[in-house]
Image 1 (cartoon, one colour):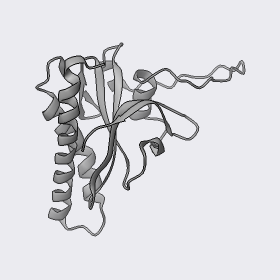
Image 2 (cartoon, one colour; image 1 turned 90 degrees about the vertical axis):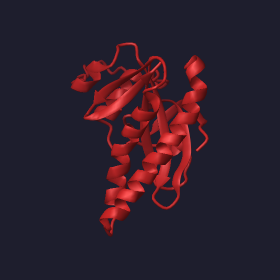
Image 3 (cartoon, rainbow, N blue to C red; image 1 turned 180 degrees about the vertical axis):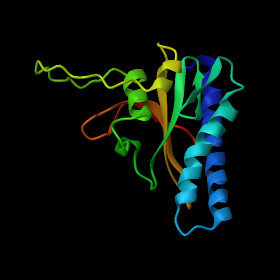
Image 4 (cartoon, rainbow, N blue to C red; image 1 turned 60 degrees about the vertical axis):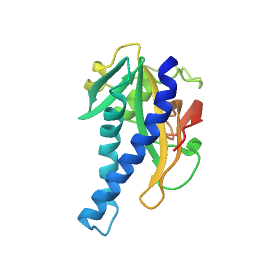
Length: 183
């Protein structure tokens, strides 16, 4: 899928997410909150920043802004990070918080074709409005999810990448393919 960029990606992505964790942990320690709010919000923001900084030097990479975050496209594939858990659980347990919104639409529109048959009950279903930011992506762009579990105490765990579809009824990711990245 990535050709010559596959090996550099497999090295750069784990390093970027490790730096994102370090920055989020340092931010949490700097504000001395009793909750992990600063860590979680910080990690969410810096994961995109670190991936953009790390991947921008690769050939055939492009930066796109989605919902005020810079997301990288490498070799026609959107590289999208998802922290799916705070404890060490398999990526097959990954589930989105919401079945709507940018992430859900991104997975539905740029992820793999659904393996699940939808029942045609003869009812007209209304397509939800496309998130305006998704219009910035090339129509044929694919999607590679970079899914990982991460906690403030243990750092990045279970880092994997692959392609998945989103089951609307329970928000679980159904992986078509996934493989671990060294973290």
